[in-house]
Amino acid sequence: MITRDERSAVRSAQIGVGLRAPHVAEVMATRPAIGFFEVHTENYLGGGPAVTALERLRHDYPMSLHGVGLSLGGADPLDSRHLSRVKRLVERIQPALVSEHLAWSVGGGAYLNHLLPLPYDEARLEATSRRIEQVQETLGRTILVENPARYLRFTRSPIPEPDFMLELARRTGCSLLLDVNNVFVSCTNFGEDPVAYLQALPADAIGEIHLAGHTTNDAEGRTILIDDHGSPVAEPVWSLYRLALARIGEVPTLIEWDTNLPELSVLLDEAARAERFSRAVADQERHVVAA
Amino acid sequence: MSSPRELERDFATALLGGPEAAVVREVRADGLAPAARVAIYRNHVFTTLTQALEATYPVVVRLVDPRFFAYAADRYIREHPPAGPCLFEYGESLADFLAEFPPCQELPYLADVARLEWAMSQAFRAEDAVTLDPRWLSAVPPGEVGRLKLRQHPSVALIESPWPIHRIWRLNQPGADPEATVSLDEGGVWLQVHRADDEVVFRPLTPGALAFRRALASGGDLKTAAEAASSADPRFDLTGALTELLDEGLIVGASATAGITPSTDRGGPRCTPMPRPC
Image: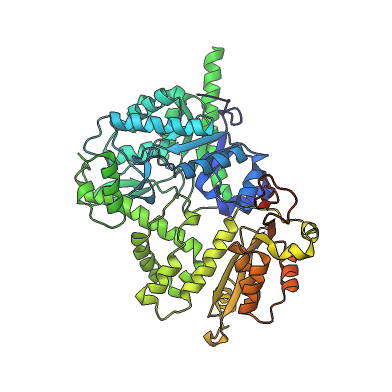
């Protein structure tokens, strides 16, 4: 269900950074050269100067609205009030991309402020597909759905995550947001092979890539990676990104940074590095075509 | 195996510090105890929700010390988790919680400082609204002004406290004179919080002006509001209070009961259009 070309405003080669409140004034004043900005939808569901600033920036940059609160993978019905607020913001900002997570966050009436894991089975696949369809119909556009960072698996979860995502895309027409850091974090936490994970995903369904930092922790003698978005992208994640680019081709890529937020220039440097890798893939592709 | 809804309820219970046995049974070890895996999620929930409360209540954090605040927040989160995904809307009941929290009884002004901080954070995010042109008011026949209902800007909040919370707030801002003190004997204050030119501000009102604005905010007409103000403050002057309100640019809508407005479709209350920025 594609009602408009949502990617038209973000070219595949473009690299973006997450826009966080402490950087807004500098971005407004300096208008850095960057492909697009992504913000957390839930931070802009009120009014006031934050939303006005976003509206102004929207004139100069493609925008991506990245939600954390729709609880797409949840068992309760979608929160219709929240969805209608998201819809109003989408209408106001006219973002190039709208994304959410393959996760749930509301249980027993409480919002838990975490992207929580779900068991991957046929019932959940069908339920999550229906919810994605409901969101897409309400918003009148396709959304991207992101693979979460995971710290646990359920005993009864027979479908591998990449297969589950592939099937979501097939059933609903949604795009996939490939968070390469989350792939590395989840696979490390379960002793799985991140390269095999990447190869299992359908390249043509991937509409955006996320890159971010993680922490390495010791839990009862076992290494557990935590996706905290609080440091530069780790070298193994850059390597995976290059592998992903080789497989997918150029795709809009975002540097995410949420905790221990550094100067804006640090984010822009990370974006420049992603752009070099992305351009190298494009050059290679042109070379192949020319040959 | 539990149903999806049961699994989520059990997981939520464990994440908010309750029993975890039901969800732990459903988790693979993968080389690490299932309970330790659940604890990773629980730690994130408490850490990030505490950070959200700290962001809304920086003066309260200063007044009680960050470590004590984290302890109080832990108790608060267990009892009052967020109801929705916008974290700037989380924590409205923290003031009531602190007022009842036994370790805070020695700081009787703390809950009212929290109410002020909550009002300020909500004012920053309140919906935008355009000031009503005051000429509309001058067109209302004088005998019918009393039945007018005025809508104030969505950012307006009214707070009264028996403590000098405005001074406590100012002395706990970055750059405030560390030698300055505030005496609790200074007495109470009647405050209005609102957003002006993208900034949240507050200022003291007379008791009469606060009662007047509060009555308007709860839907009373001008006559009712003036009566409420006069009983709060015998020196209350309606013309002065109304002029002050219009000068502040905080009236964003006006309505009157049928009979005094120009013709209405159904003869019911009529509202002036409220232009929105988009």
